[in-house]
Length: 522
Image 1 (cartoon, rainbow, N blue to C red):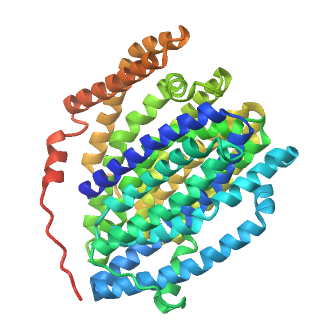
Image 2: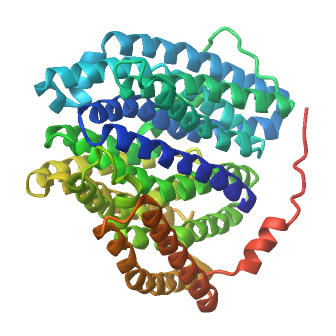
């Protein structure tokens, strides 16, 4: 599992860094204005479907089913099952795309109701959404093929595919911004094209793995029916974080212009550790738990879940505290240029600190939910997820007036911690999770090491503020931020090793341990 986490995490980190490069360009060209707001809403719609249907509910139901078929009947049977699922998925996804293109104004009236008060902005959002939405079926099919690769314990290509998304959007923004009406049009085109590139990449990787996925006529076979039954309730259980963020967009559209963009930039920074750590651990954990549960090893599954939580918190705890302490320098250095003015920098930094307070909870949701899915239980996560979404919406409505742009991130953070608490309690009551002595001991020591890091960051960040206040050049600002990040990482690494929060030697042993190849049947 450690190798899988590092493979997924490494490629996700590359993708996130390229995403930062893209967002820096967007901030410089569009700032927090109407075109930026329109594009972020247009981009949110297909990405919401991707995370719910592709990475979330579908992946959570498909990977255990694929692993079970492969274990019981061999690779050819598993490939046939994947083909049956792909044909059904493609049929209804492309049908949904046609409907969305026709009724896009009505869809946006729901997800961005505040835009209706500004007709030009609303129409631009409709246009950009129609350009970008074909990305949805392509990336959901990419998620299916990625699930096949993950079921085969091949994580690299699926984890690397999102890099193409960032490369395509950067290329289109740089190459077409002067040709199409706005940079938002260029970005939307890049989103759509990246779907083709990502699907092609993972399809090529599956071929290299020696698996041929046929595409028969769409039929609801018994296996596909079971897959859909398990997938349907998982829409909220696996995608609650994304639904909560979408609620933030809805509320943000009702707040002063630019709020959607301010929240987007804050969320992008928060997504770096969330996407890198949460996605990596969750992706690598589900196939492992599925095999252990199917193989009749429940105790091993509990141990695996403990180690997954440990690995997740190892980096999430210090990342959350660092983002809260250094919110202004991070946002100012990354985005504070061009059309992204200082007032927007300050608002985005405040939102980042509020999101970061919930970062450990956002990651733990991604770790705990697979423990339900591996046992074929999608009902409990969906009930808990529904309650979390309702709580988030209620808190948003209560906080949007007095707190303005801080209302949505604070609401999301509270809802995420409530989600984690409920998931953990249910798993514990069922005997599927109990924090072992190693986890309890190391979490306490991680917190102590993180405290040392916070002290170092407080002492160091004065130099970065000075560079910002004196109008230091971009090079000086970046140098200050790099030193700040490097100093924090070094402080945490040294303190963590000394205090026993983690062991570099133990991680190295797990990484270098040779894995016995799984028997291949069929």
